[in-house]
Length: 117
Image (cartoon, rainbow, N blue to C red; front, side, top):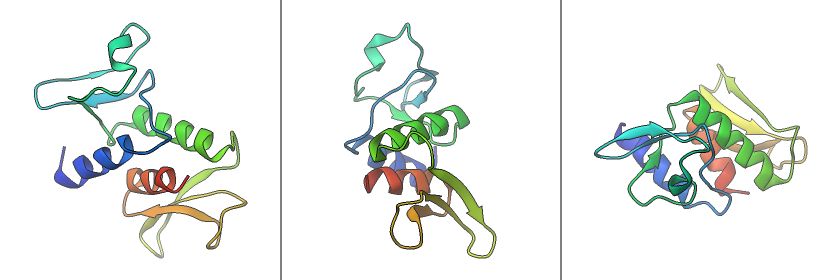
């Protein structure tokens, strides 16, 4: 994982709305894997692992956590703006033109939005 993704992963696990979910991919210095229902030891906050924010399933879980944290099971969308070269997370009640998180990558936009929840 590159240094920027490591920092993002550290930021997301520090969020109030963060938790490990089945399907997420995790990485550590020694190992990696995907969480499933048969790994209860990883369902808390493992200290040796970070979420793999380049993994599509992990990003999908992060979106689910974001919707939960904002109290909006639907209505939160993620999109990319070619004009601004930015990813954005928005919902109909958000401030600042509807954005609740923006970033250079989809992962960064989702992390910013969870931080703001």
